Length: 214
Image (tube, rainbow, N blue to C red; front, side, top):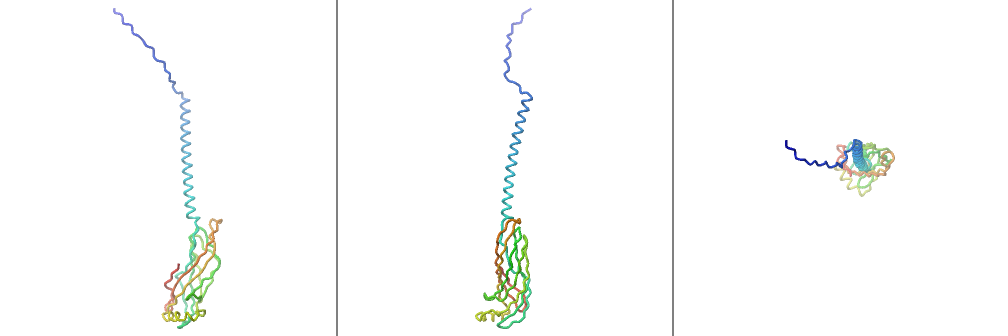
């Protein structure tokens, strides 16, 4: 029986790698999770800061921005003609002064007068009491004024005679308000308003027309 040739056996190379234990794998996973949590936390903080900055900026540009209120005469008026001749007039005018406040806080103003002028001379005035226009609202103040030509100089007689013959009286209405806008009960900003309106009173129809306010 033939003998099998000798077969050389080579020993296996020793393994230098060490398999990771469960404890080591758990430690690595825990560190990775903590790192991801820190990244998420940092992202949330940055996003919160950016959002707060946007909110504060929008708040400052809208709510905290103080605008000057506006005043003008109302279109609703009542005219009573007492006496009118070619050179003189005596009229009662009932109208409204409107103070429009667009701020996010009330506008508190002091008492003042509204003056009506013909040819740059006062022909009547009415009183406006101390009050306030609420936030983002319009305050309407009723005013009754007696308008007459007693204070007009002789230099205005030619213009006045021409206007009265045409049954149209051209007037200017002016008033100046001084007050403060209050925001959040802590911030107060002084604001002055100047009203300047031109108008015409039609003596035949007893109506106000062509009212224009700057």
